Image (tube, rainbow, N blue to C red; front, side, top):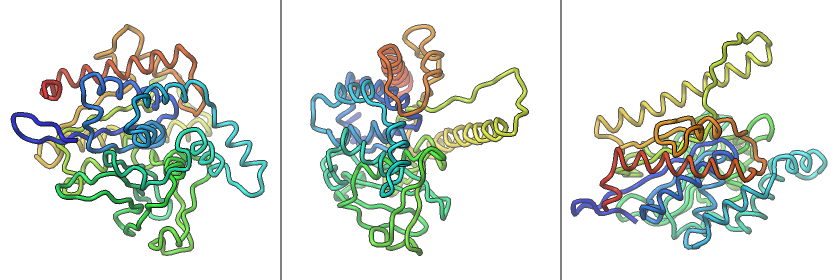
Length: 343
């Protein structure tokens, strides 16, 4: 899948942030731009979080389908799964809200497929957070980026190790990655699936708790030797308000937003510093609130105001989000890596 530039093979990675259906639609715009410049089918690595895992997982699951982008658009425009998953989980004595969420993903997106079914596509990471260790916990499938690497499916993390995950359902990996607290409880993965748990099970929550951009796998240089990386950030930008916050509940919410914004900035800095030190890929990133590169005035403001839940998007929201994601991706590639288009 690598790209040839000046007679040399170059590899391309894509990071897809969290942000619910809004982010998924924004990433659909990124996919659209990549397809237009013949880069979508040349992706070597996709790393995704939360809403990004919905979009990235569906793309990988239908890698050879010519209708995958239209099918994703239809899904995001017609399905609302948050309410049904929460209510269904509350009423059922046998399933948690997260299991109901995974059930809807399986029914509408993945059709019972497991990670082993992704072996022909790019390397893909579904990122979650291990609540026991505080580390990024990943589900990985697809072709290895490293030269001579095989396709394999694993789950785990750097501290407690990995285990085979060939039969692990894609729907559960995506559900773990998008288990936004406190709306959804964490996913339990027991020791029969992950023997390294050091307990009866591990609990996994939304990958955005650790890294809402999903860039960490891009910095695993030995395992993932990526030359270029595109970071599509459809997450919630921090909102500056002239009104001081005093309510205890709102203070907690805003404190979390500030922490998320700090992590977001640090992750961008890590990518830039790694590249400058020749220890990481050339980064091309863009955020949903960016006006630089927007196709129509107001697209950035409108897109940023769309909710980050898992409810269906109306036609105006879908149109702007896809258009804005496409426009920003195209603008960054043309400005910072035009050689990718020439290739």
